Length: 121
Image (cartoon, rainbow, N blue to C red):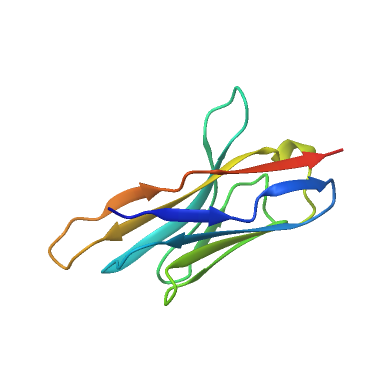
């Protein structure tokens, strides 16, 4: 079973920055799409950003120009640099990866446990 370990969340004032990290804990044959999602209280989980194995990125309109997603394939780690944070960015942030555990295994989605990001006004 793949375990994703997230870190980097916390409390920050509006206008501040945080960097989230998500590392896969075991050997993985290949990783395709890696991404970040978030869920605010009383709201559905929403996509924040994704990055493919070819480094193509996609962002939610609400974070374009402020957040940057990146990945280190050797470390099987995905990052989310968050700048110019706003109170409406407050949420639990989850990473998700689409990975194969062997050449003959299907691609499956794996989720991190979530990390709280709180932006005060």
